[in-house]
Each structure stands twice: as C-alpha cells, then as structure tokens.
Length: 582
Image (tube, rainbow, N blue to C red; front, top):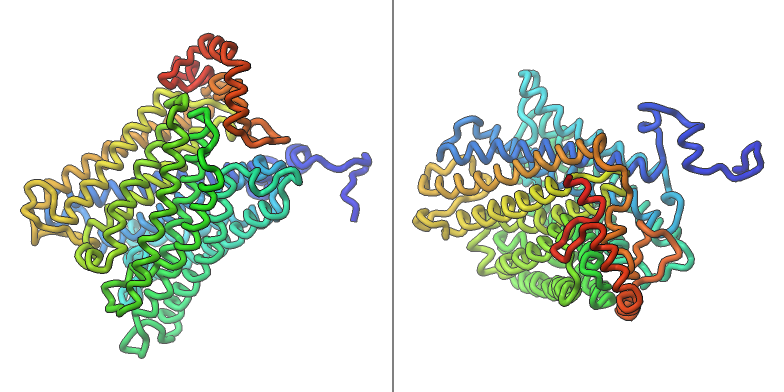
C-alpha cells in the first residue's frame, strides 16, 4: 500500500507526529518517535535512580546508627536492600542505556527511525509496568494493606524465595519478568536496526565505538535475559502451582537454580557496564582531540570480553563443591582481564599527549577507566577458587560488585548525560553545578565502596580484623565495625548531596538553561573529528593524519576561537558552558 498522502509526497515522520497525531499526554503515550521514546526512557531511569538511591541512604543510615537494627525490622531491612538492588540494576542502568540507544542509534547510523518503532514504544512502557509491580507492595506495606515487598535479594536464591509468602515476592518476580520480556524485544530492535538499517556508506569499521559496544551489549542481553525468565518463571510456578524445581523437600534441587540464574547473572554484568565503557571511549577521544588509539584492537578486546563472559558464570558457585570443572571457569575468569586490559591501554594511549579538556563528561569518563582498573584488580580474587572461598558472602563482594557496576557502568552513563543532554533537550546545564556533582559522586561513591570492601576483608582500622557479612541486617557479633559503617555512610551522604545537585541542575536547565544543542562546537572546532550524532552524515572516521592536518591548517584559527570563547587547556566546558556558569 502506498504511503503517499493526498499531497502526493511521502509524509515526514516528525511532521506527522507533531501536527497530525495525538497531542498532550496522548502524544507521549502513543508516540513511536525514537527521540521521544529515548527521553521517556531517560526520565524513567532518573526517577528510579532517585527512589533507589533514597532506599540505599535509609538502610546505610540504619547500619551506621547502631550494630543492631534501629529503624527497620530485620525483614524490612532485607526487603529494602532487595528493592534497592532490583531498582538500580533493572530500572536505572538498563533504562538509562535504552535512553541513549533509542535517541542516538538512528543519529549515528543516518536513519530516520528504529526498525520496529512500536516494539520500541513497548519497551518504554515496560519500564513503567515493571516499576509499578515492584513498588506497589512497598506502598501497600506503608499503609498497612499488604506485607513487605520481595526480600530475597536481587538473585532470589531458593529456598528463600519460596519460603517467603505474600504478594510482595510474587509482584517483584512478575515486575522484573515484564521488564525482561519487553527488554528482550528492545534488544532485538536495537541490534536489527544496526545490522540492517544503517546508511550504506557505513561499513562495520566505520562505526563509532559507541555503536560497537551497543552491538555486543544487545547480543549479550538477547543471550542472557531468557535465562532469567526461565529461572524466575520456575520460581513463580513453584510458589503458586506447587511444582517442584528448586525446593529439596519437594524433590527439587536449589543448585539447579544457581546454574540457570548465573548463566544469566554474569553476562548481565557486562550488559550493565559495556555501554558506559562505549560512551567513555567516545568522550575520551573527543575531549583528548585524538582518534581512539588502537580502534580495531579495542573492538577485538570487547569481542573477546563478550564471548568470554558467557563462560565465567560458575565462579559464583565455587563454594557449592564444584570439582575439577572449577578450574575451567577460573581460566575464563582470569583470561577476561586481557580484554579489559586492552581497553584500559587504548583509553590511556588516546589521552597520552592529547589536548585534554576536563569537562564534566570527561571527568566521569576518566573515572570509568580508574574504576575498571580497580574493579579488575579486586575481581581477580573471585576468579581464583582459593581466594573466592575466603571472600564469599562477605561485604568485600558487595564492595567489588558496586565498584564494577557504579564506577564503570553508571559513571559512563552519567558521562553520556552530560555529553548528550543538550542534544536531547536543546538546553545547556550549569557547568559549575555539574562539576560539583562529578566530584561529589566520584569521591563519594569510590570512598563508600572502598570502605565497604575494607569492612568485608577485615582491614578497616580499629575493627580488629572483624568481617561484615553480606545480607546481615545487624553486626552485634562485631560492634567494632560501627566506625567503618559510619565512614561508609558519610561517603554515601556525600554522594547523595551530589545527586541533589544533579537533579536540581537538570530540572533547572529545562526551563532556564541556555538554548543550545551543541555546547562543544567552539571548544572542539577545527579538530576534524566528526561525530555523526552532532555533525550528521556523510561521516568519515577520524584518523591521526586527518587530525594532524587539521592542527596544521587551522591551529591558529582554533586558538583564536578558543580565546574568544574563554576556553583554556585547563578544561572549561566551552562557550555555551561558560555562559551557563555566569
């Protein structure tokens, strides 16, 4: 059927949505515009970030006040920890990735829309449905109408998940399942768009790093999420239809759950961190004014990491009595560091002798490299069966996990917000407030996770070698750990103050920020390092030769433009950003 209108020409997508479709709230509800859907993802993620962060501050305060529980019951503590974890993993980091995938994949590839626009919209509203299901029992508990929400952790180990009766446990499972189903469709949509819809002029090795990281993220999502749906689907059937899969007294095997869940769980870690690493690579290249050093090596390293990630899951199960097979998983777990090492080398080499601009996105991107370095070093302990058995179920694991997910995955996504927020909203944020947020978040989060690791390995000063165990609501067995919890909570509040500045800045900028789509134009003009989402197509990947020619041809003009814009090598945000500081 022809799509021509009565005027005899193809309808323009944006014009159709703006003038011939629904308006007001119906426009947001019914839209299939990839940009609008990206913004819906963004605000979903930021709202969940505020709720999940508040939950963390509540139970951290509870731990710091006294060795025994004060504000929360034991079940309430575990419930709040569980909801915090599920929120941050499934409803903050993944939707924040989806915001950038939706908005920028078509811009990077030179296409008008996603391959399946309606599937795209379904993914956005799957976030709303999942969040409502997860948090309804919490609201019901506050008004006395229901029991507590799910309290079995984000990994929902049996028999704990089957022993807990009440709607909260089932609602948590169904909420994540709804989000998982719609996310699987979104991952297929993103992958198919890159595979089939990109501009014919773009070969595979013409694609910017962000697109390559997006490819592997969504391949791993398509592989891993069905395992989660299998595991939690069987838990739901066991809880509600008396089937036997994991409960020993009914003939099930709890280890079966671990095999299924961690087949999802460890590739999922890389789903959480790869987009942040891809954004950091884009930002580091742009604000070092150098092409990525070792572009093909970088792609090769992430290919290796993605493949190897599928073979490391059982290092979570070294304590279950695995025999010689543990050494196969140890080899994969240790080999994966080679891929991450190449990434770190490429980022440092890109910055080496570059003209570095310490903008807010650059600060977060450098923190990604530092976080990945530290996370890899303490992650080596969990790849070795002997040391893993020593640290298993301690707070050291919690510190390592947060260091990986937050300083690598979340920090990279925060770099993306500060880099692309003006492109998405048409408004510039206040850069001084943005840098305050960066410093408070980087130092607060890293200090928090260091402290958590130290009270988990017995090295915190004054603790007498006592160790905090994970998922413990109290530590009456070792009251000397209280100082460590106070320090950790202090860092958490520092990070919390930074997030207040973050939200105030973003919301303020929507109304009062300077109207501007590209705040980096003056700062980076003349470098001959085009980026499709800013400059459009045709796109030619930058090379060291093209950048050197640009410096030779336009160095004086660039220096004059920088001087006129108030730009220095010290790293001001650019012409528009300097105006924001005023």
